Image 1 (cartoon, rainbow, N blue to C red):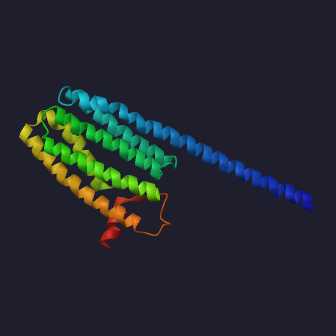
Image 2: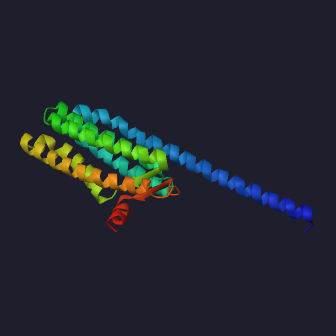
Image 3: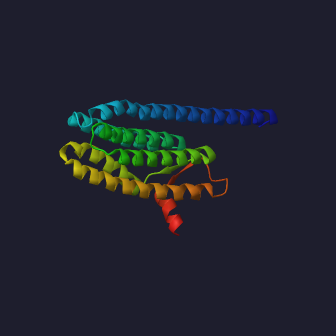
Length: 219
């Protein structure tokens, strides 16, 4: 093969590879946009949860169930499409917190949650949101929830569904227990964030498991 032919072939292979990479990046971008829209669509359920709490229990339960189902669905979809990056994780966590806080505010407006518990739970969530946003800004790192974090979210969802069928005293006691679990999660999250931010600058643009970070802290 002549030098010019070899050069042309090499150039063609380079352009083909470049076009293939551009195509993959374009597809990943489309998948990311679709997932972001799907995640944000869950916010449409927040007013339903807020306004129906203790007023229309069946509607509250249906809205929470749909919120949880779509949360699981977009997570599975993101992993299957290879688009489960830190920004999607961060957006997903933000929407989760808004949904959970809607239930908390709904309980307060319904008169079954004392103001002290409302303030404590919301303050805890604002603190967690702040340290996670700081870590995202500095490192573009998100922490993937494990059983401990999911147990908190699930307990809040089940507590909101069960609230109309429990006595006010029992429900407040359960909410107090949720607060203790929420504080434990916040402490664990704080340690994980400090561990990430204390590592060399090369650790960035990734998703880390909460369980793996916890084991590293213990070790």
